[in-house]
Length: 115
Length: 115
Image (cartoon, rainbow over all chains, first blue to last red; front, top):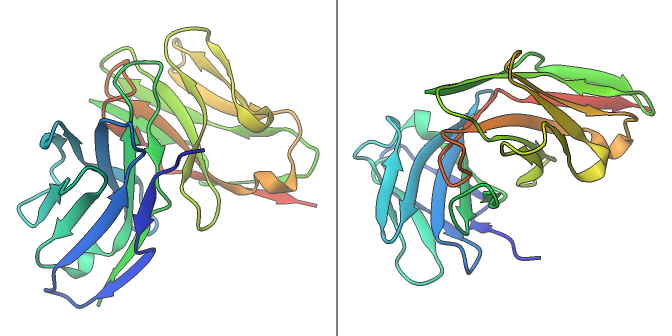
């Protein structure tokens, strides 16, 4: 069964460094998402992406964040200058289309630790 | 705007006994509602979804949930718990009656199953 994959599974970085989290959505999916979950807190929506542009973003997704689909398979989340509070589990998701017959498929997550 | 409240952060049951995980939601629109499960070090897996069809929804692994609009609830049940059901469960609502929109998560319920 096709699945969403994410790399790395765990990333440790120093405050102020740039990180790129990578996701490979399911191949025939058209909509892509990033969510994050700070330890002990809810899973929160960050951004959705369709047709090579951001379609929706939350207040969390400020100028430090960016997303890109550099080729036909990868979907990346970049954090330009990491802060301690960016430490969280980051989930990528994708969906084939919009409407009730579809569901969002999630990857296993990348645990980002900022020291 | 929409929100989800999972009434119990932890639920402990004995193997073979019923499971009840409670969820209440609020939504400005006719909602789509989901239950996702997360096993340790795994991604989020869809258990079941409600998308304005039958109010009693059956999912995988013997789980089901009933949408009650008058109570704004979508509780998850299973007649008989199995050890493999031990995991974190998330009740989730979409912004509209449309699975392609951003998802709003509840805080999660950790289900523990005792032998």
